[in-house]
Structures are given as structure tokens and as C-alpha cells.
Amino acid sequence: MREKLANVLWGLVWIAIGVFVFGKVMGFWDIPVLFPGWWTLLIIVPSIISMIKNGVRPVNSIFLLCGVLLLLEQNYMIERGTLGKILIPAIFIVIGLSILFRSLFGGAKHHYDGTQGYSATFAGNVVTATESPFTGCEADAVFGGLDLDLRGVAIEDGAVIEASAIFGGIDIKVPEGVNVKLRRTELFGGAKSRVASRNDGPVLYVNALCMFGGVDIK
Image (cartoon, rainbow, N blue to C red; front, top):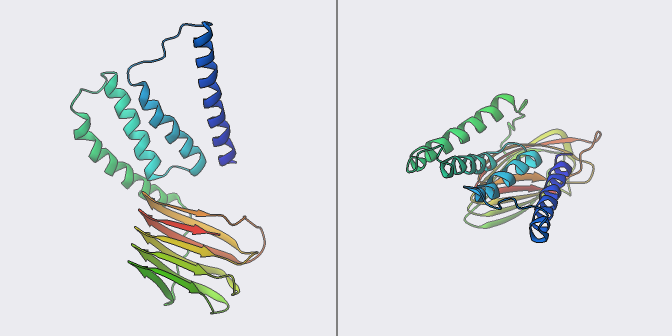
């Protein structure tokens, strides 16, 4: 639903631009094209649409903050020269608030309490799980890529994967019929599940920490 709404908004934005330019060229109206700081809309509008589509994340929050502050500065609502002084601490505050709210209001988190772990550090690693039923694991990628294939094992209901992608990437392939529940903590990275949501079948919980990296579940 969010993705559909975001696509509708993108469509309306492009239609509005087209109608405005057409009317300007044809002389139907003589509205000034530019206003002080108009270019900040190229930051603000995509950030808002990203929030609608993907939820409030540190990255889109930071871009929105930067766009709004730049717009205020361009319209002399913020004194020139002070933006650089407040931007960096404001970014840290946004990141902290995002993490805090996700921790407090992100719902119950399931933890993995076992010892099974796979990692890729400064290299690539392809792992095909053989333990069945699969009860969970830790998956870490640091400056590397980890490919974890679970398609050959049965997933125990309630299994948990603790996935950490730090300047790296993790691909997780799951069997058909598994219901993936993804919980994300992202900082200049992202986690995404391409698995269709189901009401039946075993549930696999994935806690993804992405810092300049990504986790892809399919």
C-alpha cells in the first residue's frame, strides 16, 4: 500500500511539472518558475516520498532535514554561515532519535540464543545450510559479501537470524512457504524482504543491522 501511494505521488509530481511547463510555454499563465531555494525541493520531495514508501529511516530523515534547513537559509530564515554549525549536530540527533524510536516502538524483538554463525570479512562467502530443522544463526558481513542459502532445509517456526551488514552485503535465500518477519536498524544502508507475506507456514525472524551495507531476503 505504501509503495503504491509513493508511486501515485511520483506520478502526480511529474504530471504537475509537465502541466506547469506546458502552460508556461503556451502562455496560459505567467507564474515565476523560480523562488529562492527552489532547488531544495529536489531534496525535500524525494525524502518525503521515501518516508511514505519505506517508513521513517535515518537516511531519508537526514536528507529531509538538510533540504528544509537549506530552504530556510536560502530564504534568510536562518542566518547565512550558521547552517554548517547546526547541521552536523542535527544529523546526529536525527540518527539517535530514529534508533531510539525504533527500539521503543518497533515491537517485540526475537533474539537468537544459539551458537551457529556464518561470516564474510574482507571476502566473499557462500554458505548452504544443512542443519534441519533450521533454528537460526548469526550472519555477519564486514567489508565482504555473505550468501546464505536456506532453501534445502526446513525452517523451524520462530527461527531467528541476527544479520549484521557493515560495509558489506548479505543475501538470504529462504524456502517457499516461509513467512519472513524483518526488523531493521539502518544507517546509510538498507534491508529488504522480497518474500511474499503469508498467514500460514513457519515464521522466520530476521533482525538486520545495516551500516553502509545491505541485507536482501528472497
